[in-house]
Each structure stands twice: as structure tokens, then as C-alpha cells.
Length: 442
Ligand SMILES: NC(=O)c1ccc[n+]([C@@H]2O[C@H](COP(=O)([O-])OP(=O)(O)OC[C@H]3O[C@@H](n4cnc5c(N)ncnc54)[C@H](O)[C@@H]3O)[C@@H](O)[C@H]2O)c1
Image (cartoon, rainbow, N blue to C red; front, top):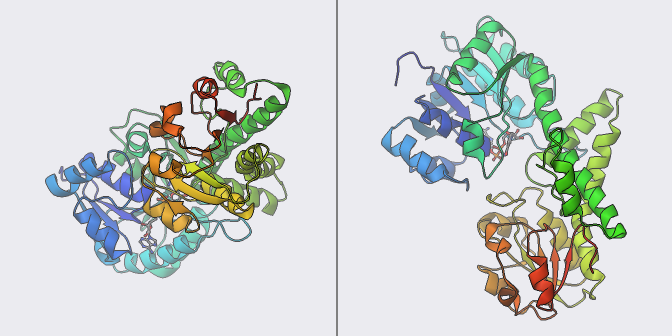
């Protein structure tokens, strides 16, 4: 490692913390990761990722075992002492009313503040968690200063550097971002953080900490709104005998719009979009500028998973039937079950008197925790065995190429394609009734 390279501390080794830490280590930075869960720390130190993310295992093997640039610990003092720049990558969940719960961030600011008070060296604290505008320059700064007896922008640095990675593509997103946003309380903090990204080939945007926080929320809210928008168009298309896939293609070819996030389906889930839209909506109300768009985005998304159950119920009574769910994770290539539409769909089916079986290629452990009320299977044949109908919930590659013969054990030959992923023509020709969100059925 070059002597001049700042050392990095990562607080919280979830999707953001572990991916960021591993990618920084891969760029030659010495990284110390802190978590409170002993099993996570042990697994990271053995290069065994505690989360599923494409390429993460190989990367950990390189940076932990081979290069010895990343190390995980349960000891906060060790993580802070061994770092010049400390990233806070802790959860920022929704509170009961949808507003952000900042408890993890506040508690951490207190703990880091105490340790900052004990050291002489200049360190920069960077909030990477998604937090509402004003958090870094407000409560985080206040707690750090109170606990350390020092002044931000003078004795220590303070910055906000939002993360835009998408689970499933997190490593390539982190390494090749569209942009890096650095909000800082002063120039020195900005210069420190910018050094970490010197090898990145993208615009680096210098902003206030609050603008950086708002950029993250506005980006996620825009993408979520795009999904709810195409889902509403899909619902109208269904009534007008139009295939929304053709519409989305024609709309997406407009350079100003782009085809991404224009795929109609059972709605968005995951750890970010639902909570971030709720948090920004809450902020808009708190400042007396209630956002009608964000309110509608959330309302559309709440009802969208249920469309698949409505479609199924229009084809057969659900009481006493066994329904197979293909895919449980909130999207493909992740094991993340947070706010997954599969949970809403399964609950509704059970409420309607059906029995539910589910299979996901990767999200097994997480799905068993999030959906204890369904029968979990280990393969496509197992989930289809004894089922009356199927709902495709997550468009894993494994499902996209399914042929009618693969679903021959589905007794009523009924399929709801909640992600527009199957080859409908083939299934219809083979005698299946297949209903697709955003498409009227011939
Ligand atoms: N997941 C994403 O795709 C994504 C993308 C961009 C931004 N974000 C934001 O980044 C933040 C973190 O998200 P995540 O998905 O990585 O969360 P996560 O829940 O996957 O990870 C959080 C980690 O912090 C650990 N932790 C909890 N309390 C701790 C403490 N006191 N000290 C040390 N470690 C502690 C947990 O054990 C866990 O490993 C959130 O604000 C989120 O909104 C997430």
C-alpha cells in the first residue's frame, strides 16, 4: 500500500458497507470493517460473504486472504483508530409513520464522537447511509461535536457521500458509478474524500451535505415513480387491449426517457425504494409541501402486487388451492427479502384460503425468515409438484427459459406472469391459461 493512501473504516458491513469496503480495498486502501454481529465478522475474515452479491466472494478472497487489505472487527476503537476516513453505512429504516428512523445513526455519532475526543489525529467522518436532508449538518454534527469536544470542519472532517449501488450489480455499480456525490462541511473534508475516488472515471460532484442527501432521495424517488407510472399505464392498457410491453418499448426509445425502470410488474420492493420514497414524502409533509406524486407512487405500489392475486382469482376460486410462487427475493440476483412483493402476494393468497409454496434460487435463508407461513421448496419441480396454479414473482434467469413441459405438473395449467418474463405464446399454444400484468388476454 502507498504510504499516502488514507486508511478507511467502515461502520456496518451490510450490502453498502461490505461492498464499499471490499471495492476500496481492491483499489489498494487498507480497510477495517466494524459490525456488531460476531458471525458476520468471522465470516468476512474467512472471505465467506454473509450476504449474497455477485462477485463478492471472489473479491473478498482477494482483499482479505491474498492482499490482506480488509479486516473485520467487533471492536469500534480498533476500527476508528485504524482509519483516517470513517464511513457510516448503518441502516436507516422507516419509522411506524413512514418517516426515517435515525437511531442507528445517532447512536453511532455518539460512539464515534467519544472516540474522536480521545485522539489527536485529524479524521473525516462520512455518512454513506441514506439520511434525510439536514441530518449530517444537523444531528450528526451536533452529536459528534458534543461528544468529542471538537469542531467539525476544523478539528475533524465531516461529509455525506450517498451510495447509488443496486443490489445484484453492486460491485460493478460501485466501481463504475455514473457519478460520485460528495457533500461536505468544508473544503478539506471534500478533498480527503475525493482522494478515495481519484481512479474513478466519472463526474465528481461537490455539494452541500444536505444537497447530497437530497440527491439520493430524489434519484430513488424518481426511479420508483417511473415504476409506478408504467404500472399505472399497464393497468390502463389491460382494459384497452394493448400490450404495455410494446408501449414501454416505444416510450423507452425516447432518449429523454430511457427504457430502464419501465418494466411493468408486481411493483418495487427492497431495502431502498419503499423506505426512501416514504421518508421523502414524510419530509415533504413536514415542510408543508406535501408531494402528491410521491403519495401516488406509494399508493400504486401498495396495490400492484395484489393485481396478480386479483387476476388469479378471476380465473379460479382460491380457497383450498395450492399456489406456487416462482421467485421470492424482491428482485433477481439478490437474497434480499426486505419489502419483497412476494410477501404481500403470499399473505393475500393465504387470506383468500389458498396454500402457498415458494421457491427462490438464492433467497432461501432470508425467505424462510420473511415468509414462515409458506412451504419453502428447493427446486422448480418441487414447488410445482401438487400446485394448482403459478405466480411468477421474481424474474430470475432460471425462470425466463421455462418451457410448457417444465410446468406440466401444474394441475389447472394457470399461470400469472407478474414480471412479463415468460414466453407467453408458447404457453398458450401448449394449452395454458397465462395472464400477464399489463396485457389483455386474447
Ligand atoms: N442496500 C442497498 O442497495 C443500498 C443502496 C444505497 C444506499 N443504501 C443505504 O445504505 C444504508 C445501509 O444499507 P444496507 O442495505 O447496507 O443495510 P444492511 O442492513 O444490509 O447492513 C447494515 C449493517 O450494519 C450492522 N450494524 C447494525 N448496527 C451496528 C452498529 N451499531 N455498529 C456496527 N454495525 C452495525 C448490521 O449488522 C448490518 O451488517 C441504508 O441507509 C440504506 O438506505 C442501501
